[in-house]
Image 1 (cartoon, one colour):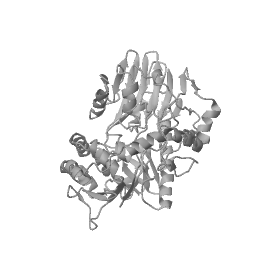
Image 2 (cartoon, rainbow, N blue to C red; image 1 turned 180 degrees about the horizontal axis):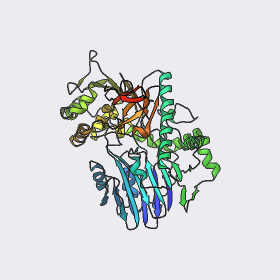
Image 3 (cartoon, rainbow, N blue to C red; image 1 turned 90 degrees about the vertical axis):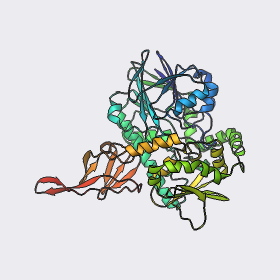
Image 4 (cartoon, rainbow, N blue to C red; image 1 turned 180 degrees about the vertical axis):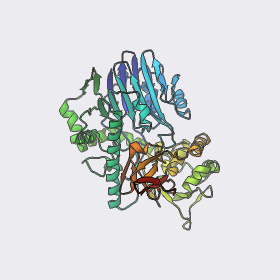
Length: 522
């Protein structure tokens, strides 16, 4: 088996039974905020544009590059579809001209004339744009797991498909927290330090759980070439920056006793033999090293080559073409009428500050109206109105996969993080909203308990059902789910990350050599 890195999460897998093109991303994403790092602009699409199979892990635009798929990928490729709750991906691909599909079932292997593929799908509202996935490929000699930026929780089932020869996984940030939040710089720095450490530790935990012979960090970070965002790049190994590059994670692995990391850049090819992996880079070693050791110079040169694309995107934004208030009222209010559980979850007001116009999304009264100074709010987003006009004109049903991931906004909130707020902006159609409502309606705490410190604790994390016996770390009475960093006070069960979630706990009482459980419930 031979695997070529196409940059970011892009892979071209070649086997004796056929080839698979995975997650090719070449065009800037999110209003030209994100670019692949290192650059993949010199790769020739003709060398991988006619695969036997096409796999796209999810619909985020740094994985689903519609323009590249339309212009450079053969429509005769057979698409391997993850087992997602809605057929959004298939619809988009059919619109691009693809017509051959294999609909997989979660964790069920598919035989492709000798090549075995298995897709592990995640379907919580917080997973990607209503779904994310990882790919297992087995050609009888080499077995790989392309986790990209999915966060699987059923690790026992996943491990049963091993042992794995190589594990590709995300290790870096891919979101807007805490950079866009209005808060004291000291507090923002502390949160950044914590997030960077958590994401590196989470990735290492996956490395140890999967236990592959070799590990390749990929699926990020992106780079930011616009002047407004350039400071988001981790240029000097800032401990508070959430976008560390591949060299940082490989060093982190070595510091923790894992010496099996491999470095790849766009165009690097890894060839697998019996227990071996040989990497060939498209550049001399000193030039590969310079990309990371002198990142500022590299990105400034990259920026100069791409500035015209950034300018085109900004100049093409609509301004003054939309009556934002009436458009949002017409669009959102019918959704709010149906969003019983989302509205209960948010239970407050979201203020969109659009420079000369301010719009309230009221999840208590289920109304959209103009803000006045006497109206209180719980969540505030300051956004260039042109971005909101774009969302309205194109009827973008997922504002996360566009506006919010662009990082072109600032935010303030009163209280803890509330996942319902951002999840609502993913489900801006009746179909999407129904799925979200049904998912929340069916979700309930799993009361399988385990011993943690001096407490018996619900095994399943209330956030995304992660197994806390694997991902939980307890210190001084605080349990941290390292998968996403959510924290819980074991004495009360209170979530310290989100006001809406609670953990079932009960204290263990020691009595004369025997152990009994108190009956209090949180």
